[in-house]
Image 1 (tube, rainbow, N blue to C red):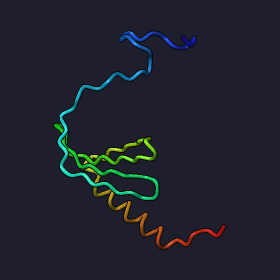
Image 2 (cartoon, rainbow, N blue to C red):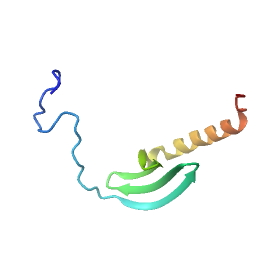
Image 3 (cartoon, one colour):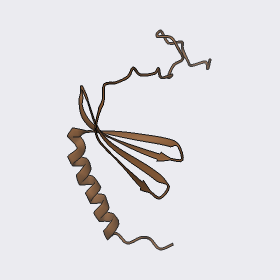
Image 4 (cartoon, rainbow, N blue to C red):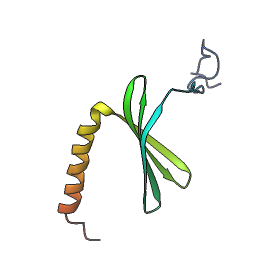
Length: 95
């Protein structure tokens, strides 16, 4: 044990995540897109707390996920549209 670590009163090592109990999620829609060597999976889900969009990036077996509550999807869409517009309008830097 590192000197500044203290045993947890809840057992186990500090910062060690415990397996989550299975959640009651329903998949409403799922789409996959391959971009270069990355695979993105967009899944609209619903659970007792509400709807959300899960975006998972898979690169060679390594996965990263973000979750956006449905209440933020319109803001997310606007921001994404602004980024697409900027990518089209701003010329690339010359190497």
